[in-house]
Length: 209
Length: 150
Image: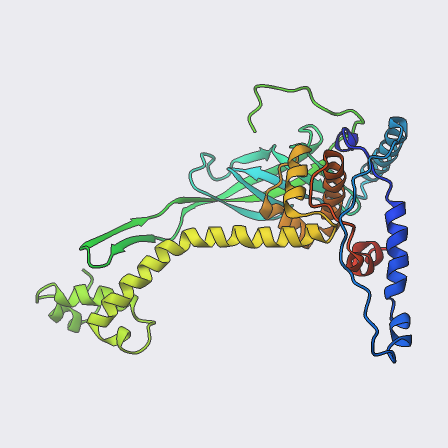
């Protein structure tokens, strides 16, 4: 997870939350009920105020420690196989799909694989379990996540009528079109191996996203 | 031509008129009133309907994009981040989820979305992007922090 937090300076959250809880207390029902007899009572405004950006000085070692803590927790969950049913966001043929195992997704347009082919979907943008989410920048490490799918059907769409007409101009065109559709079933989504603290891959110029 | 009955076979001998009209009436079968029964009205209505259907295929995509944008901006503002700041800061962090996915995550995976919102918020503050607000009080009351406490 450190690759997520890298380059990002964390803000202290406690300060603002305490302020908010105190403002919430002001908003609570009891205070409103006690002031209801007062006709001039105006409820406190809940308008969000713009904040001034303050970059806190936090040592990088503190951040690293927090990262390591989170990563070891996630690794624990994975090694004990308590991650639950995983979902993944995959990028396929120019579209993104949120899938889980057993799903069927429809790929529109021409796509070469044929029925029965088993493919591995490598562009995984995000994987999530019960208690954690791995966010790829832009994709999750290929060795970490394995999304397997089978092509189950190749068909054509229903006939779409493409009809153009201009009024009073004697212009009318009609065309019919059917485009190929492919159905694929997601067989499994697995996380294999452990998350590395520094899993940033080297830039590979041959990779096509 | 397929002759399903003797009546249609009789009709088939004449000029093309019957079949030409029948094609239009088939498309007008679900219309109401005269556009359903009178050819001159039916043909106008069918043409208009086909033009709408052709244009509608494109409009549907635009409408969905608008809907996703509304959903994502609403759920980002829950965390005090404007839509533009949210999307830009995710882009700066090299997270390339599209609007459809973000809307989906906001609805079905609120905890993942919260993580994305926090991430983008911190990024946006560091980059000094406009459109960052205090976290909404409503979110503190009804938000995930209170709902998902174990």
